[in-house]
Amino acid sequence: MQARDLPGEARVELKTLSKDNSDWVAKHLVMAGRLIETDPVAAHNHALSAARRAGRVAVVRETLAITAYATGDFALALRELRTYRRISGSNDQLPLMVDSERGVGRPDRALELGRSVDRATLHADVQVSLAIAMSGARLDLGQPEAALAELEIPQLDPDRAFSYSADLFHAYAEVLEELGRTADAEGWRERAARAEEALVEAGLMDEHETVDIVEEELDLVEAEEEPAAEDEQGVEASAPDEEDEPDDGTVPTEH
Image (cartoon, rainbow, N blue to C red; front, side):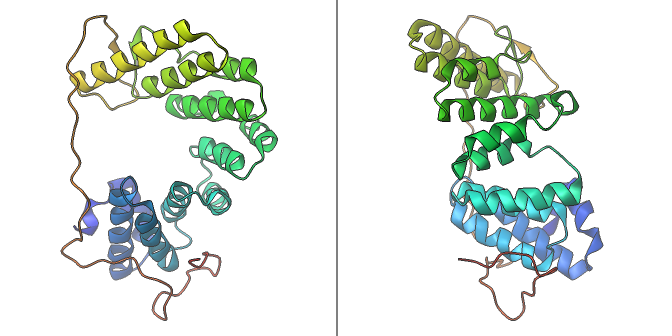
């Protein structure tokens, strides 16, 4: 595992750091990304280690927020997402902010936050994620009809599949099920399955690429991920110590 394993856009953000510090932070970000699905606590510890050295870098605070969310610490996730948004000026993580508001038990505030941004200014995949989060907040409030309406967006196209389509179709099916429309729900689950299969078959992950959804069954190729092992550089997520000084005095300590 090397610092260069970090995506180029993120490496550019780290250029504000010294070379040694940049490489050190990059390795922890790489490990956080590798572990997020299998061991979110370990991933979060790596993100904390990176944040202690680079607390003013947007991608670092974003990673810290995502790993906090994955561990169920929604309050910390929300705080870090606000910081990321302030540093970067980006609304790309607005859906996660909405979901974090739900996580701390504030669905009303989640809806207010989701409505605070013009959705037309967001990328298509972010619009979809936001619709799903807003729908969840409506369900939290016992408003299934409104939850369904939140999902009825232009991207809800049963005949075409983008990388975000399956998630949207599944969410739509779940709300239909909540409304007692079982047959309709099953139909959307089948569309979600076909979307997943079509995208795997086509090898598409880019949100701007699309394939037509066909009725024939396609073999689903499941990509196996190697478990994230210790890298040869010996990077370990560290607890707070004398060498890990907070960059700006605002990075949370491990708890």
